[in-house]
Length: 226
Image (cartoon, rainbow, N blue to C red):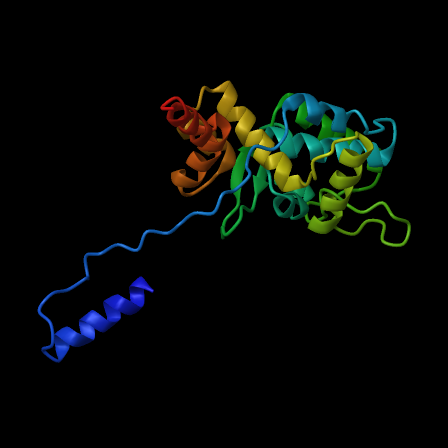
């Protein structure tokens, strides 16, 4: 609506019907509320506890869950990983981020490193660099790349098995990871930006505001007026 009014005023100026302009008037976007709070670490532990670590599927799922939590990776980023993107000695992964053209280096923890090693060793096959890091285990599609939707379904099933009432998805775990990182760093958004890899710091500020429930605090202050 504002853009239409500005266009009308510009036209009126061109034909000499008005002498002012609205060119300097900014269009402020109204941001919808985004639930970025996720779940606490204790609830995530109950999801991890559902994984059967003595099985091939369990070793795969465990490695994926660690990447979702410790590195706040997106399911699409995990799906695209190849064996060659995993560097054992430098303890890193090369990840093709959302909207990126080049892969970026992500440091992983020793626990996640071990989880990926256990998964690859259990596969018991010759792994070339261009093979997918995470594969399907269904007999009909065995060895194919584990697609983002399959990761989503697996996370949902584990969460439901853990009795989590909130709908849990890989992206919800990413929310949880970022929110917990902000808690542990006392809101150090600059540092946590290295984890979340958000281009715009304002996006991360939404996480911090939701974490601290700024709106709720202000409402509480106003409620004390009467």
